[in-house]
Length: 175
Image (spheres, rainbow, N blue to C red):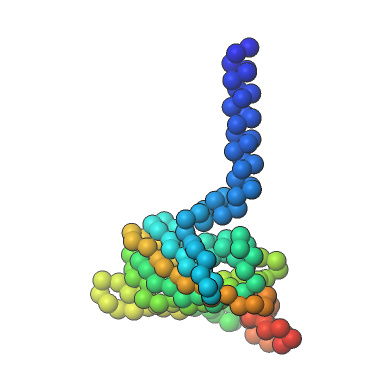
Protein backbone atom coordinates (compact mmCIF):
# COMPACT_ATOMS: atom_id res chain seq x y z
CA UNK A 1 0.00 0.00 0.00
CA UNK A 2 2.79 2.46 0.92
CA UNK A 3 4.51 1.87 -2.44
CA UNK A 4 1.31 2.69 -4.33
CA UNK A 5 0.83 5.81 -2.19
CA UNK A 6 4.35 7.05 -2.98
CA UNK A 7 3.91 6.15 -6.65
CA UNK A 8 0.67 8.16 -6.73
CA UNK A 9 2.40 11.15 -5.14
CA UNK A 10 5.28 10.87 -7.61
CA UNK A 11 2.87 10.76 -10.57
CA UNK A 12 0.96 13.74 -9.20
CA UNK A 13 4.21 15.72 -8.86
CA UNK A 14 5.20 14.82 -12.42
CA UNK A 15 1.80 15.96 -13.67
CA UNK A 16 2.17 19.26 -11.81
CA UNK A 17 5.66 19.75 -13.23
CA UNK A 18 4.41 19.05 -16.75
CA UNK A 19 1.59 21.55 -16.25
CA UNK A 20 4.06 24.14 -15.01
CA UNK A 21 6.07 23.74 -18.20
CA UNK A 22 3.01 24.54 -20.29
CA UNK A 23 2.37 27.72 -18.31
CA UNK A 24 5.97 28.93 -18.77
CA UNK A 25 6.46 28.84 -22.54
CA UNK A 26 9.90 30.48 -22.58
CA UNK A 27 11.26 27.86 -20.20
CA UNK A 28 9.47 25.01 -21.94
CA UNK A 29 10.83 26.14 -25.28
CA UNK A 30 14.41 26.26 -24.00
CA UNK A 31 14.60 30.05 -24.21
CA UNK A 32 14.81 31.00 -20.53
CA UNK A 33 17.88 33.17 -19.93
CA UNK A 34 18.72 33.31 -23.66
CA UNK A 35 17.17 36.61 -24.65
CA UNK A 36 16.21 40.02 -23.34
CA UNK A 37 13.79 42.67 -24.59
CA UNK A 38 15.41 45.80 -26.05
CA UNK A 39 13.83 49.10 -27.18
CA UNK A 40 13.78 47.83 -30.80
CA UNK A 41 13.17 44.12 -30.27
CA UNK A 42 15.36 41.47 -28.63
CA UNK A 43 18.95 40.47 -28.00
CA UNK A 44 19.48 36.70 -28.03
CA UNK A 45 22.65 34.96 -26.83
CA UNK A 46 22.87 31.27 -27.65
CA UNK A 47 25.45 28.82 -26.33
CA UNK A 48 27.11 25.53 -27.17
CA UNK A 49 24.70 23.08 -28.81
CA UNK A 50 21.85 25.57 -29.36
CA UNK A 51 20.13 25.44 -32.75
CA UNK A 52 19.97 29.03 -34.03
CA UNK A 53 17.07 28.81 -36.50
CA UNK A 54 14.95 26.68 -34.14
CA UNK A 55 15.49 29.20 -31.33
CA UNK A 56 14.49 32.10 -33.60
CA UNK A 57 11.33 30.19 -34.53
CA UNK A 58 10.55 29.53 -30.86
CA UNK A 59 11.09 33.19 -29.99
CA UNK A 60 8.64 34.21 -32.73
CA UNK A 61 5.97 31.97 -31.19
CA UNK A 62 6.66 32.73 -27.52
CA UNK A 63 6.80 36.52 -28.02
CA UNK A 64 4.16 36.59 -30.79
CA UNK A 65 6.51 38.46 -33.13
CA UNK A 66 4.58 39.84 -36.14
CA UNK A 67 7.77 40.01 -38.26
CA UNK A 68 11.38 41.00 -37.74
CA UNK A 69 14.84 41.38 -39.22
CA UNK A 70 17.93 40.04 -37.52
CA UNK A 71 21.73 40.06 -37.66
CA UNK A 72 24.14 37.80 -35.84
CA UNK A 73 27.66 36.49 -35.34
CA UNK A 74 29.25 33.66 -33.41
CA UNK A 75 31.15 30.39 -33.38
CA UNK A 76 29.32 27.48 -34.96
CA UNK A 77 29.86 23.77 -34.45
CA UNK A 78 28.01 23.25 -37.74
CA UNK A 79 26.73 25.61 -40.38
CA UNK A 80 24.70 24.11 -43.23
CA UNK A 81 24.18 26.24 -46.32
CA UNK A 82 21.98 25.47 -49.28
CA UNK A 83 22.14 26.57 -52.88
CA UNK A 84 18.66 26.48 -54.41
CA UNK A 85 18.37 24.48 -57.62
CA UNK A 86 15.38 26.02 -59.39
CA UNK A 87 15.10 23.14 -61.87
CA UNK A 88 14.69 20.54 -59.10
CA UNK A 89 12.99 22.95 -56.63
CA UNK A 90 15.28 21.95 -53.74
CA UNK A 91 18.46 23.00 -51.96
CA UNK A 92 21.85 21.41 -52.49
CA UNK A 93 23.25 21.44 -48.92
CA UNK A 94 26.84 21.76 -47.74
CA UNK A 95 27.88 21.65 -44.08
CA UNK A 96 30.93 23.34 -42.56
CA UNK A 97 32.25 22.33 -39.12
CA UNK A 98 33.85 24.53 -36.43
CA UNK A 99 33.57 27.88 -38.18
CA UNK A 100 33.13 31.52 -37.25
CA UNK A 101 29.85 33.02 -38.41
CA UNK A 102 31.28 36.25 -39.76
CA UNK A 103 27.84 37.58 -40.59
CA UNK A 104 24.26 36.38 -40.55
CA UNK A 105 21.26 38.37 -41.66
CA UNK A 106 17.66 37.44 -42.19
CA UNK A 107 13.96 37.88 -41.57
CA UNK A 108 11.28 36.29 -39.47
CA UNK A 109 7.83 36.03 -41.03
CA UNK A 110 5.00 33.47 -41.07
CA UNK A 111 3.91 30.74 -43.44
CA UNK A 112 0.82 28.61 -42.92
CA UNK A 113 0.56 29.70 -39.27
CA UNK A 114 4.17 28.84 -38.37
CA UNK A 115 7.26 31.04 -38.05
CA UNK A 116 9.36 31.14 -41.20
CA UNK A 117 13.01 32.16 -40.82
CA UNK A 118 14.95 33.14 -43.94
CA UNK A 119 18.66 33.68 -43.32
CA UNK A 120 21.87 34.09 -45.26
CA UNK A 121 25.36 34.25 -43.89
CA UNK A 122 29.07 33.82 -44.32
CA UNK A 123 31.44 31.61 -42.34
CA UNK A 124 35.19 31.19 -42.25
CA UNK A 125 37.41 28.48 -40.86
CA UNK A 126 41.01 28.42 -39.65
CA UNK A 127 42.21 28.93 -43.24
CA UNK A 128 40.31 32.26 -43.39
CA UNK A 129 38.58 31.13 -46.58
CA UNK A 130 34.94 32.25 -46.56
CA UNK A 131 31.86 30.35 -47.67
CA UNK A 132 28.28 31.44 -47.50
CA UNK A 133 24.78 31.58 -48.82
CA UNK A 134 21.31 30.53 -47.71
CA UNK A 135 21.38 29.10 -44.17
CA UNK A 136 19.53 25.82 -43.67
CA UNK A 137 20.79 24.99 -40.16
CA UNK A 138 23.19 26.34 -37.54
CA UNK A 139 24.42 24.79 -34.31
CA UNK A 140 26.39 26.97 -31.89
CA UNK A 141 29.82 25.63 -30.89
CA UNK A 142 32.06 26.53 -27.98
CA UNK A 143 31.58 30.18 -27.24
CA UNK A 144 28.33 31.82 -28.19
CA UNK A 145 26.21 33.39 -30.89
CA UNK A 146 24.82 36.91 -30.50
CA UNK A 147 21.71 37.84 -32.47
CA UNK A 148 19.99 41.23 -32.58
CA UNK A 149 16.33 41.02 -33.60
CA UNK A 150 14.56 44.20 -34.77
CA UNK A 151 10.76 44.03 -34.71
CA UNK A 152 8.48 45.22 -37.51
CA UNK A 153 4.92 46.28 -36.65
CA UNK A 154 3.09 44.39 -39.43
CA UNK A 155 2.64 40.64 -39.61
CA UNK A 156 4.34 39.45 -42.77
CA UNK A 157 3.70 36.14 -44.49
CA UNK A 158 5.69 34.11 -46.98
CA UNK A 159 4.02 32.55 -49.99
CA UNK A 160 5.09 30.51 -52.98
CA UNK A 161 5.45 32.79 -56.00
CA UNK A 162 4.05 30.74 -58.91
CA UNK A 163 6.39 32.45 -61.39
CA UNK A 164 9.48 30.99 -59.70
CA UNK A 165 7.98 28.21 -57.52
CA UNK A 166 9.87 29.49 -54.47
CA UNK A 167 8.98 31.20 -51.19
CA UNK A 168 8.98 34.98 -51.15
CA UNK A 169 8.17 37.53 -48.49
CA UNK A 170 4.86 39.26 -49.04
CA UNK A 171 4.39 42.88 -48.08
CA UNK A 172 0.91 44.02 -46.97
CA UNK A 173 -1.22 44.58 -50.08
CA UNK A 174 1.52 43.43 -52.48
CA UNK A 175 1.15 39.64 -52.84
